[in-house]
Length: 349
Image 1 (cartoon, rainbow, N blue to C red):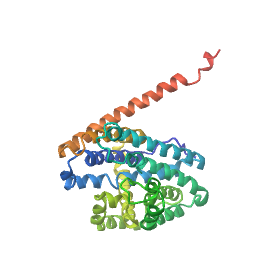
Image 2: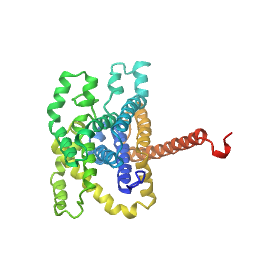
Image 3: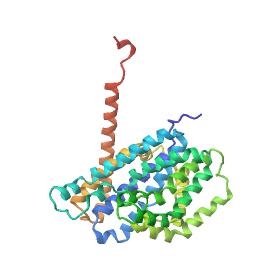
Image 4: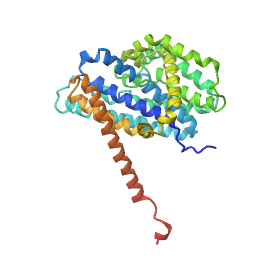
């Protein structure tokens, strides 16, 4: 079997792109003035920070889970760590806000628990891993079943979300599906993406879709429904709680984006930018954490205080700072391994 540590250029490039798209949209949401945020450039930022960011990232997470073939117990443990890490990240990125709620009382009217238990992408990723671990023994290696379950989740989301919101405590319902403002990435409908990615990887091991004559329909479907996709992508409330139709359009978008990166990425992956994107993709969790710690806390201090020029400038700045912090973090890990690794045989007493 192929070495599971082998890295695939296209998924790493895509993950690198996804996290950079997330950086720019976080800058736009938190730091650019509200009247500009609702203008064309704000909508463009939201569009780029929509499907090419979180949905793409979650499809790739499902893809890698199927590719690595880890046990259900290993997935569940990783899921618990991601969920708890996501809660800790919520506290970290909102540290200055929580300080102003609890200590200075400047924002005492805000509910701090809505920020601590915000259903952001890391807690969702943890819950998605737990779900996949539970489904693995049921759906097994049937890729079509994984995709069908993902589609079913998206299809029933509008009704299930209302049910969760009416019968469960708010802070639990937010993670499963509700209309609460801190329910950003609930399981319903967002499970669609990791489950589809998982199923797609299983199918790719059995079938080749490269020569399929029906693939020409994908650009037609994407362009035909582009206005619909744009409208939902640029309205956060609808984007966070979208329906199956948008989910299908998003999957078509992701397939086309992946195909384009795969086609043009062969030479691009060897360039400095391509190498950087792959490095970012390989360290995507650490990069995501650092950029949120920086942007989230600065966003409390300078909330919607800058113009359009700052959107690009600050995005580049946070990308550079996050890259530097990831490098420091990796060096720290290497030093710890050197210090705590077993001594060589000749050095033993």
